[in-house]
Amino acid sequence: MITTNYHTHTKRCGHAVGSDEEYVLCAIEAGMKTLGFSDHAPYHIPGPGYRMDFDQFPEYVQSIRTLKEKYKDQIDIYVGLEVECYRSEWETLAMFRETLDYCILGQHGFELEGKRVYNYITEEDLMHYADLIEEACAHHLCDYICHPDVILWNYPKIDEPVLKMARRIAETSKKYNIPLELNCGSGAIKGFRKFEDGYRLGYPVRECFEIFSAYHCPIIIGIDAHNPLWFLTDEYLNRALSVVEGLDLNILNDYNLIEEAKKNKKLFY
Ligand SMILES: [Zn+2]
Ligand SMILES: [Zn+2]
Image (cartoon, rainbow, N blue to C red):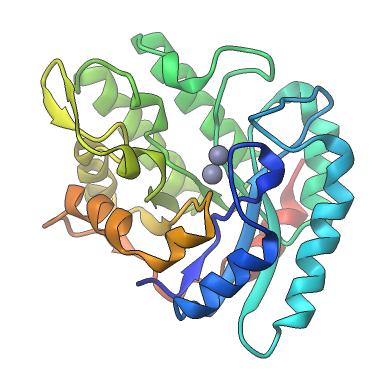
């Protein structure tokens, strides 16, 4: 079990279940000490099934802040969002950066209305994905990078472009001191699948974490909870950990993401 999780969704995104309070109660039951909510960021165009609507945002923040106060003797609660680096949404992203405790980057596409990240399969796509992660970090948009290898969800085999992408992401992480996430969400839940070069999870991918290990990148474990019950099982955590077994990973245990976010927020531009 982990005691800190900054990657938590709410049912507002349209593909998660449970009330906000159920996430808090399950986190407390699981023995967690720090719980960060980071639902999918809303933008000026609605994305039903993918993210909350923009007009739900104030109520989301209010709900989490109310729970923070209600359960303050049992758990530390923070409110953030899982954002994308979309230049078209920069004013909105600036507002999130100013208002929220923290932001994490989950780059689910290259532009707001574009193809989803699960459908990219060329080397050019992988480099574009690495570019967006670097741009987000250079602008201090985020405090950690969610599932940095999510773009490999349907990528046919682990080849040189994958390793090149992983090296670029590792360099970005080191340059800006932004942790990378070992994600225990969809990839770990769906389990091992057959690809051209054998069986692996959609993500996390061992070859990427070998590179993150070699660069000694800071790593944070994220549950990516879309259901409060995911806090009460170690099954997905253990499956994600099995992928990186034996690697000398720089997993951060006492990292104060909120303090780091306070510094990063001031640098956003
Ligand atoms: Zn989601
Ligand atoms: Zn997420």
